[in-house]
Length: 362
Image 1 (cartoon, rainbow, N blue to C red):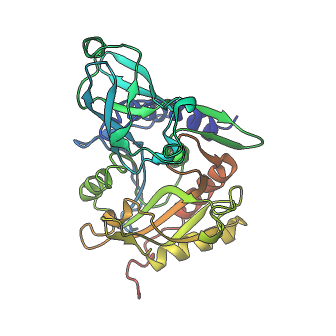
Image 2: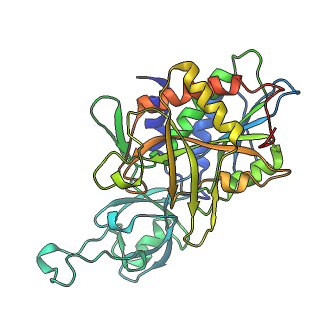
């Protein structure tokens, strides 16, 4: 088993709702420390490992997010059933009868999103998806007093039960592939940077609260003031019948880049990458003989939407890996794509020199 696959599996099994990423950060810090890499945390919780390089070359922030989607407890009923608020773009179509974990200071408490017995479901209910305010979680305690005694309070974070399914070949499914897969790739790139010679200054950053409206990476960028930024995240795979009209991204087809993303449902933000960063990734892929997929999609948004606006402006690009079933209980990817992405990023970083153009029209 490769290091990337092993790290991905381990990280997928650690709960880390937005604003509560501490356990994930500790696991990443331990992996970096095992490679002799020091990492520091900022007030937001972002974790940064810096690799000094040529001061004449543009500095780079390579980053990915640690947090995941989920819920916060908003009410505990007298009968012990729990109501929650959605945190992030949870797919409500995928919630009925899912197992969850409520993360308390005393430990993790298992629970179940209730699903009305099929035998008692009327015709008007069979095809209705319950919105989050209507779902209830059953922890088996039976009373509000018992739930409180278990350490569950208003504001307790809740995530879908962490799980991993190793599929055929190099494919894998489970919780929080978005973006623990990006974390696994970034850890591997950091290991390689620790033994490199030459190259620019690179800050490898594991960010917080991405799923909570892109909160963490901007703080890291304001502190580091990079000239360039490469963000690692999912690319929506479109090689299944339900997604075929949305693009040409195939799982197992290698890493990719986003040429345009935009989120218009309230956020009104997006990223059009810097042309020099596009050329960098394209030229590196060609030099390595790696396939490079391309995405342009509305409805997707990454931290680069805010990072690009820091200081005098940052030359940014979104790089990633194909993933199916986004924001559901069982996302899936191909770890061969992650391995190729790590190779691509390592080589691309080495090509950033003092002559790298930071102006869009040099």
